[in-house]
Image (cartoon, rainbow, N blue to C red; front, side):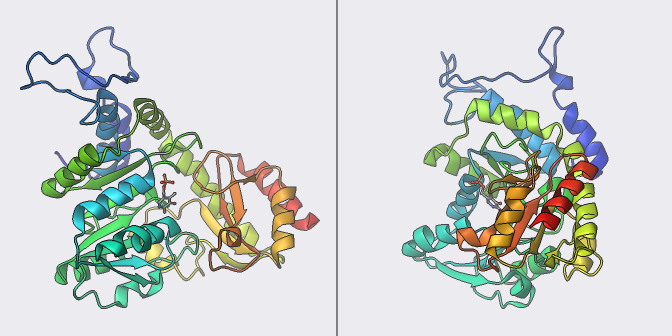
Length: 371
Ligand SMILES: *Cc1c(COP(=O)(O)O)cnc(C)c1O
């Protein structure tokens, strides 16, 4: 694969990735090929054989994702299917896995409920302590930065060096950033896992995930896991993600600009405490964010007085969808304590969407002042 390290060029290439294959009269958008079987009078040389092995629609999407990641990619029917593939394909009995204690909680449950009973030791480490943690004897170090929902960061390049010195592989969940804002593979990670359910697909209408990596043997093992476990994406879902990704760059541009402006305005609002946004110069994550991220993202968190005030604020704001998840076109917010996250009862995670900034801020400010 020819490496393409210019992010702007990469996205321009992504939008035209099918062009060199088109014959006169071909559709410009890829087709949705849902066939399970392919004409196979002779097994050798057939590009497609059976739908659990590969399909034309996944391949269109994986070519697009490969340009975005600048690395080979394997697609999955959800973010958790991608994370499971990466962990089950690498770990074996007796191995030690280091995961963040403050990251996406389903990954921790996968560890305790399904990996630990197979004899894999799971050690949970807070994101902020990851860089100093002794990695000796670990097989896999798994990071999520910024952590979700706390928005703490850890130094990917430093931990990659330390993990490799300890003989471990480094996996990074890059869901909150996307390949446009943070490049874990360039910083030394062995694999990136991501939920394309969030900003890449971007319209809150499809679950999807992928694994990216530059070690051919490792990526082949991930592909084998998909083919053998059967965790295969559907053609329509792959097509929706391909369509969503075409506007990822413009959506992220709007979302990150608005998030930064809203964070600055919230910082000056008397009702807000414990505001976190890596783009604020006084945020504890800011210095590291400048070093390893090329944007500050669209997620911010803050705390209102108590549960009742936080719920009243969310209910009063017409431009905040009260949903879990993030990265959609609409601004979304929720009180994370309702899921049992170890945060204050009035803690809100806001995923800033694509609404024009002024009406969005006016609605947020009015809801804050009314509750
Ligand atoms: C949502 C999410 C996942 C899981 O993705 P699904 O598509 O819901 O399976 C994994 N990691 C992070 C950080 C997430 O936000």
